Amino acid sequence: MNPALTLGPTSAQLAQTQTPVPPVAGPRLLTGWYETGAPADLVEHHRRYGQLPLPGRPGQPAHLIDEVTAAGLRGRGGAGFPTARKLAAVAAAGRRPVVVANGCEGEPASAKDAALLSLAPHLVLDGSVLAAHALGASEVILCIHQGAAATHTLPCVIAERDDPVPVRLVEVPPRYVASEASALVHFLNSGDARPTTSPPRASQQGVNGRPTLVDNVETLAHLALIARFGASWFRSTGTPQLPGTLLITLGGAIRRPGVYELAGGTTLGTALQHAGGPTTPVQAVLTGGYAGTWLAVPKSLDVPLCQEGPPTTGSALGVAVLLALPRTACGLAQTAHLLRYLAAQSTKQCGPCTFGLPAIATDLTDLVTGHPSAPTALERLHRRLGVIPGRGACAHPDGAARLTTSALQTFATDLHHHIHGHPCPAAGDPSLFPIPGRH
Ligand SMILES: Cc1cc2nc3c(=O)[nH]c(=O)nc-3n(C[C@H](O)[C@H](O)[C@H](O)COP(=O)(O)O)c2cc1C
Ligand code: SF4
Image (tube, rainbow, N blue to C red; front, side):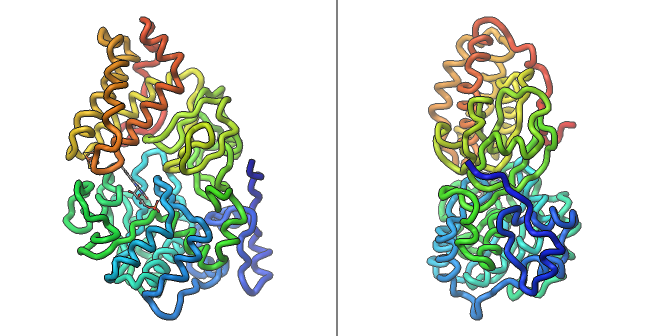
């Protein structure tokens, strides 16, 4: 089990030193928030972390790739892919690349990227510029959703800096699938924010046909800290499987909902305690956002949060969101709400996603409402769940299938009840979790 994080050095301690000391045992990305409660302008950012060490000549990524490999940094945008392997793939493509910083945060329950872009925007820009400089990239494109708060602040933040690589801010339509990596590239090339259904990969041929590195903004902020303080510092918290810290959004039936920076491998129970614990007895927690996995409580409280792995050894963290479900709610009805939302987000380019997601949403809704077709709905649901994953051009349908499968397992007792003639009393209740466009 990870020890609880303590806060980083105070402003007063930092001010006594000439060279900024790396935040050792506490929050790293959000250390300034804990010290001052205010966003960092460029002067404050440099006081806190020091200057960004850029290698002399652009286009020499070997050192950065080695350091990130040693650090074991994994992407914070959902899939947990090793960041060094993406850097290496783009570097190997052999042409002048582009770096895309994905700050869209399409997941409705997540607030971590918005918090980071508000409180420590220069860390994100440092990481983006560092990757671009090392790869010899022609530009950095920072993508955020239209209407996000950062659309008002980031232009000034970018203007404050004197970066060796141009940084362009681009607003993307605020839709769930629009911030999937290939959809972003497609949008930047053609104005159409839908995933592409055929190769090549962005790392080979992305924005303007150039090799393109698409990384989540939190990933890039960690990169900026690794460049300053090194791989072993990065690994000095977290676990071997998930080194470093990560930003987690806690919500649902929790006392202090919000964004927390916790060590990788923190257990589910410890994470809930950081947010003050539940407001009411909780039966399960949805981990990883709306395309995530339900974990039963209290059974799973000791499960370490990591980015992959079977539920017996750890929970796939996905987008780092934890949503606590009260014992009084119906997990199946809530899943049906989320599934209807996910089905509506399909870009309708692939059959299993276009037809499969509405179908499983209907099956689950029939089950919880006691529709006459309920007795056969479970069989249909299982059949469909067997054929949906891995058959879309992007991972959207896989996430919806994962959510449904975990709901059937976690709420098996309720399922049994509903199938045997007891429709869910909470079936018509609104979603407990935010659904965009509904208030
Ligand atoms: C439906 C869908 C939506 C996604 N939305 C986001 C998003 O809002 N932000 C993000 O960083 N990654 C998102 N991703 C993941 C990206 O495709 C990509 O893996 C990620 O930006 C890579 O960054 P990382 O390696 O730093 O994690 C999404 C993926 C899918 C399938
Ligand atoms: S899997 Fe779904 S969301 Fe992804 S490209 Fe195909 S239709 Fe669009």
